Image 1 (cartoon, rainbow, N blue to C red):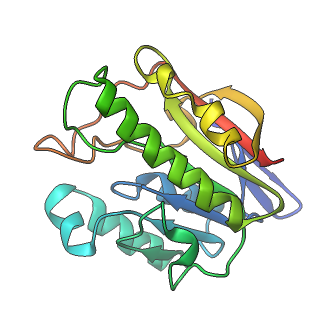
Image 2 (cartoon, one colour):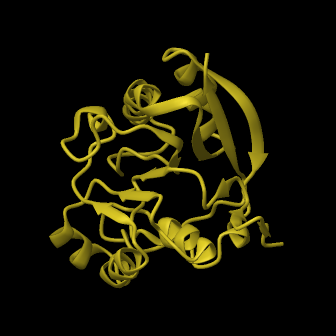
Length: 211
């Protein structure tokens, strides 16, 4: 069921509200950011980012450019070429702070089998770098959200342990249901199948606070 509610002018979609300042990172074709902005009727409090350049978006994803245009029409800020491991010093992000920082399905790229030790290490380094920068970009009661697959080998990444290394404490672990975010299409993001989706039936959203 879509978790959208309206109270005193504030609109909600699952964990997120129109009153929160929200930073989304690694958003592929920007469809998650657009799902939020559409539900809120405005993107004025949303900063949507991806690692890809604008030119790369047009070649990788069939709907990215139109999603970006709609986000900008709704008032969102859209940034390209943002590395999550250095985002806290990005010229368009420093010294901004956020209520929610969201990274759905972090992935360092398809360079081997997912259960390969070197692949797991590269994924861990990505997430570790994200946590270390995100913690500096939160308001006092702000939250970092990471949605991640939880069956083997993905659980071996140790998301909670990686967060604790940046003094982030888990507040909640919630089941992720894509139908809660109408219009969101998770993308593989790299390789020749970059515009294809993938199975996320075993996924959960891990919510962290600064310790």
